Each structure stands twice: as structure tokens, then as C-alpha cells.
Image 1 (cartoon, rainbow, N blue to C red):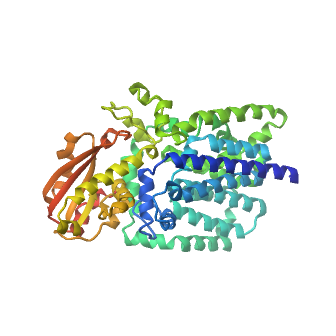
Image 2 (image 1 turned 180 degrees about the vertical axis):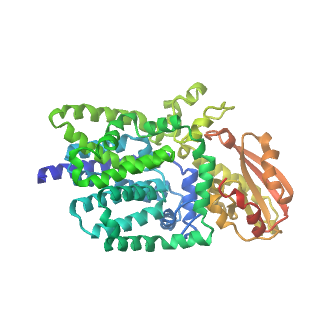
Length: 535
């Protein structure tokens, strides 16, 4: 490829990087931090080689962001946005390595930008953006190996597979896909010395996490078992595929579908057949094991790159079709993006989708979880306007939550304040209190749920505990409080705070209790509630 085309491709990449940056600036101005982000931020306050429900890399990133000691959404999205920018750059470079021109680069990056699932996961501080990055980076190295056959690329591949594992264990699916592909195309790799060296490199990098898992009775296995028994077995296949098409933008199916269906068989990919077949097998593994729709995102991100290059080669004599297709893609993105990203303010978002009209609530938002579908089939109650994207409204929720706790805390006798803790049913509230409650000097919050189980502080039976849970209405105070009641001789309901935009009716209110005369110390509570870690 000549230099002028190289320059055009880099110009396209730079333009999309700038567009991404502008989108990030706008969304950070309108967004708060959702529950999972809050957990990852709190994980940064407890750096470790492992956590109960996530891999350690995001905790390391959270630790760095927490050094700024701020509630700033921009700061807490810093690594997520860096990851998303690197994905744009690496996607363009992957297209170049595949032999695509600036037109294929444009198609790839447009597909990424207009897919709601990618714009959302690239906005949030969750492992998903890092998962996508390491899948894509590993694929890029695999292409280099297929084209150049240099042993050093296998070492690089081992390093990036290991870092991907430290971000999210789902990269094992890609590793399995690569392994199957090697069986078909290059079996001799299994007996070559360099392959075993690469394996040792991989194992050495993940060893600290493996040791942590062993010391904690392999919580990621228990998490996977709980996830399968409570979520994956209940997935409706039709709904799941509808979500996959919707969240990747129905118009992009021509791009990623081309890669999945044709890439392993067309002459154009002959020299990189092992790499593209690895993606096909990764996709098949996800289908066989009924992966949730967003599990497919890393595979389809790579498929965008491969599919764009194949489409460009197919349309050489009919390039006008590409100039019709890309504007359609762009228009669909303009339509879909405001539904999933806080491009608009909360008030404008509600007005834009007419969400104050109860009949429209279910029909005009894009749903991003199986639970969202189920929740939105229920009757909406009272003045609640359920909004699926938590980042639109959680900042107000966190403020209301911490202010109310502070009101209760300030009314306690001084002796009780000295030995006071906050106990929440879900990791979301505990993490939010620890992040947003610093300005009130609130006591430490803890939960038996998820990662927070490991961070339960040490206290004795003289402690005073402020208890928080979610409920559908204040009338549920007795039922919700019963979860905690057995641990206290006296549990008094104190207050309820309405959450007007909560996505689910079960989270419509925060319920506040004061627990006194604690029956158990912290060690006993950890033992009694260990079965709720992965509820």
C-alpha cells in the first residue's frame, strides 16, 4: 500500500479519535457513576491480586484514579476512555495489517461508533472496555504471527493473553478458539519449544491471581456457578439475540456477519486463516454455551475489522454501494446513541423519549440486560420514571443516600458514633457510601455482597450499625428489614428515600434502619452471610 493511502488511513483514525474524545467530554458532563463503576472505584481502595467477582486489573486502574481523591466522573472514567481511544487506534491499525485501505478503516470505525453496545461500554469504568482492548490487541499480534511467522510474536501473544486474563477471564474463550484453530492449521506449534516458553510466560503473569484464588477457595469458580444457575440458564435465546442485534446496531450486521460467515473461507484471508478461524470458533463457543449478548462484543469488534476489509474487496467494482451504506450507518448511530449515552441532560432525555408518558417508557429505551426486559414488563408505579442507564440519575441517588445516612448518624450519641458502621444489602450502596460519604466523614460501609465481602471491617457486639436496603415501597420496611433483623436485638426503621428514576421497582426506595445490641461480631457475621456473596 502506497504512502498516500497510508496517510489517508491515519487521517481517518485521527478524526475518529477526536470524535470519541468529544463524545466522552459531553457524556461526562451529563453523567454520574453507576453501581458497577462505584464497585470498581471502591476496589481501587483495596488493591489486591484478586477480587470475589472481578479480575485485578480494574482494581489497579481504580487505585491510580483514586490517587486524585475526587468524585469527578472524568477522573473515574480516565482509564475507560484511554482504553476506548486505544481501541479506535488499534482497530484502524488492524485494518491496515489486513490490507484494507482508508475506506475499510472508515467502515470499521463507523461501525464501532454507531453500535450502542460499544459506545456504552467504552463510556463506563468496567472491565468490558479492557476486555475488548486485549482481545483486539491479541488478534493483532496473531495476524502479525500469521504473516511473519516470527517466534517473538508468540511471546507477545502470551503476554497480552495474560493481561487480558487479568482484566476479564472471558479471554479464555479466545484462547480456546486459537487453540482449536492451531489444531486445524499448525499442529506443530504444540511441540515447539517457543510455544512452551510462551505458556510459561502466560502462567507466570497470572500466577499471583491464581495464588489469590487458591487462598480464597476459588471465588471466580463459585461466581461462575452462581452466574450460570441464576442468569445463564434463564436466558431467552430469542431475546438475547434481539439484544445482540440491537446493541451492535442492526445495520452493522452486514459487517460483522460477513466476517463470521465468509472470512474463514475466502481467498483474501488465506495467509491469516488461523487468526480468522480462531474468531469463528470463539463465536461458536459463545453460541454453544449461551453467552449473554454482551459476551459477544469482543468477538464482533474484531469481526468489524475483518468484515470491513472483505466488504471493501467485494465492492471494488461497486464502491458506490459503500458510499450509500456508510451514511445509513451514521444516521442510525445518530438516532440510537442518545438513547444509551448521556449526550442529553436527564431532563432533555426524558423529554426526547417522552418518558413522562407511561406507555412510552417500555418502548423507547434500549435495553442492555435480560433483567431490563423482565423489569420493564412489570407495571410502573406512582411517579417513578424508570431509566435503564443508571449514569443518568445515580449522582442524585448517591447524594440523597449519603445525606440521609448523615442525618441519622449525627443524631447518635457520641459514644455510638465512635463505634458505628454502615451495613448495606448490596455492594452498590456500600461502595457509593464509601466514595460519596467522605465529605460527611461517614463511618465505613460494608456489605456481604460480592467484592465487599472481603472488606468487612472488624467490630465487636458493642458496635452500632446503620442498615440500608432497597425496597419497592416504604410498606416493605418489615419484610426488607427481616434480612438483617436476626443479627440485632433491636432494629428500628428510621427513614425511606424515594429514587424517582430507578430502573426496577424493587429499587424505588432506600430503606434506613438503626441496628442496636448486635448479637454477633464481624467474624460471625461474615460466616453467617457467606452464602450471599454471589446472590
